[in-house]
Structure formats: C-alpha cells, structure tokens
Length: 329
Image (tube, rainbow, N blue to C red):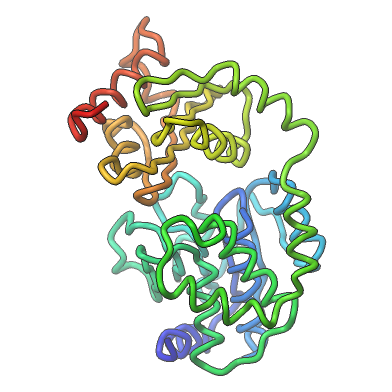
C-alpha cells in the first residue's frame, strides 16, 4: 500500500520525537514490525526510538533483540511535548496489553480486531484479516520497492512464522505473499537459531504444573496456572491446544492485581475473542482474533465472586457459551 506509507510519512513530517511502541511484553511479531517501521523512518530521515513498558519475557524474543541488535528501551512513564508522536505496533489503545504512555498524536499499525473508536488516531492501518503485523509492514517495503537489509527481512519473516504458526493459523493471501517475498532475502540460519531458543529451563516447571492442572470437558480444555508471565501463559495455551480431542482452550493465571487469560480455538463454531468477552461479562478488557484471544480481569472487578471459586466461575461461563454456540460439546 503505497498510499499508507506516504500518509504515515506525511503525518510525521513535522514531528518532534517519534516513539514506536509495541505491546507491553513484546513478542516476535511486534518486535519485527517495530524494527521494520524504524528502518523505514530512518530511511526517510525521521528519527525514532522503540519503547516498551515491561521486560521482554520469551526466550526467542530476547534472542531476536540480541541477534538483530535491536535497540529497545523500557519506559514505565514518559514526559512528552505536544509535537511528539507515538506509533502503536501490533496493538491498539484500549487493549489490556498496552499502556498509553503518550496520550496524543497516536498512530496505529495492527492486525487485531478494532477495539475502540479509531477516529482519534492521526494514522491507522488496522487490518484484522491479516495473520501477522509483520506482513503489513513487509508490504510497505514491497509495494514501494524499498530494499531490505538481511536483518529486517529475517526478523519480519520470523514474525510472520510465529504469529501464523508457520502459515497454518489465520493466514491471509498477504501473509503468504510476504512470506515468500521475504524468504529469499532472509538468513535462514538465523531463523534456525531462533527456533532453538524458544523456552528457558525455568519454564519447564510451569509446563509440568500446567500439565498436572489440565481439565477437559468434551473438546474444551481448562488450565489454571499460578505465578505465570503473559508470554508463558500463551505458550502453555498453545501446548494444551495440541492435546488430542481439545480444540478450545481457556488458560488463566491469577495474580495479586487480577486474572490474565489466554484463549485458543480451532473450532469453526467457537470464536476465541467472543468467548473471551463472554467470560469477562464487562468486568475487564479482552479481545483478539477468532483463533487467539487474551484478556485481563482486574482484582477490583472481582468482588462479585464473594466466596465463589474463580475456577468454578470461569468454567461455568465458558461451558455456558460453548453449549450455546455448539450443541455438540
């Protein structure tokens, strides 16, 4: 989309500081997309910094930053001027996975479902039908005939691979086209290195606990994990989804400040994002895609439970939704 890149550059023409902000705990797709956007801005003489709120958790995400020498800064709060801009990447305002550091001059490049009114964004490229944000960013290079470095091509390729599960999950024609566009320009040995660094030893304990806590009702799997970070929660959700007969997974971790959710669905009848919102019942923030979703219910919204067990509430809501949508459960 030539016009999209031109529009982005036009909006940033007289910008002060430009910040590229992926979601709070960056994953490979958001890291790759941020790197691609920074490369494009650098090419057109627009200085920018990549910032994020929380520490990178996943082993392969850390390896990406190291391997591609990506400069990313952790920021919990910021002072900003009226001419500063922020580009949200792989997320949107209102999502549970992003902190609104700069409350003005906001731009968005994302592939998730639209969360709130988008009229407040100075620039937006939100395509919910695309499997990876990296595909959207790669297209900026493709349609404008902009050469990529090996690092940028490899990072974007890996971002597509991870968010589409190697082109097997929620894939759009653009994802496939950009995959092959990037493949011949990427360093595959770096991809292999990243694939060999996807978990750390300490994660094995959480995996073991998760396997011991899995409960299955029909094709619906539940797993309650204590003391688990966001990235690992998603990985465990993916793992449980590979169990024979399980096509929908509700994984959640209770913390002092609330409950974090990760949902997966391979069922054509059960949409992960809709299931997430049904469980929330307007008591938190949740959303995502048909196949993948996440959410967060703050502790101060959980008074309704009284003495009821959290596990019972979540199972009741999820089973109720699934039975309503699919009588075969």
